[in-house]
Image 1 (cartoon, rainbow, N blue to C red):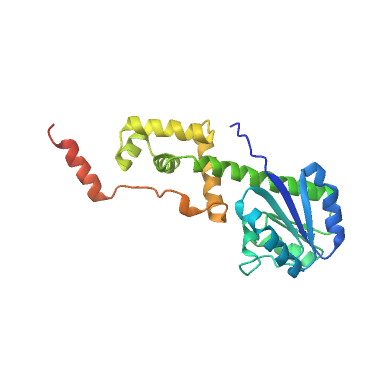
Image 2: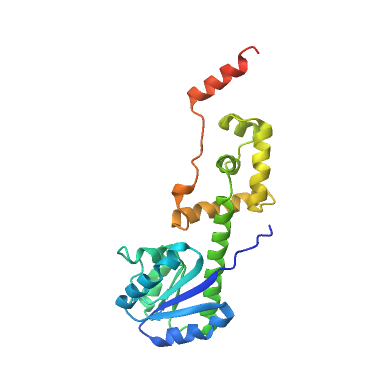
Length: 239
């Protein structure tokens, strides 16, 4: 599968009282093609979010926050910090006990790095975070371009239904199913059903994580028993 990943403007926010973290990450900014901002307290972070809310809400930038838990907690609460949870977050800490805890629980973090860290270590982690986010946005854009019928067909394809079964469930002809399948494969750049499964899983995962608005996803229309009986009666009726 040759998927062309979108290249978005990249922004890193370092939330840490130690300015050395910001200085280190700032040294690798050119290789990441990213801008870097720094805040040293929760109050500064609140003001930064107010100033940058429009950019973050637009989802038109690739944003990663690198933070020390002394500035903002692992799962920040409060409406002003909720937006941070929709983007990759990398925790940096000097606490070996916290590092051990983070290894054993699901925190919603992209990764964590124990201080002191090397420039290459943080650079690789940031590059991967940016790539995975941009890859996810690329897939989301592809699925947004699908019609309601193509989404419905896709949902049934990934569940393993045949063209005939999809035809019966959606009350459309097999020929129409084939057209929808061809269109959704083309629009998602999927070369096989395996590719489509992978892309669909990423799309659904992004929906759960808030990368896209689930309200914009067309619901899957599955005929109920009464509708199926009516359709079968129509098919049996003499012409």
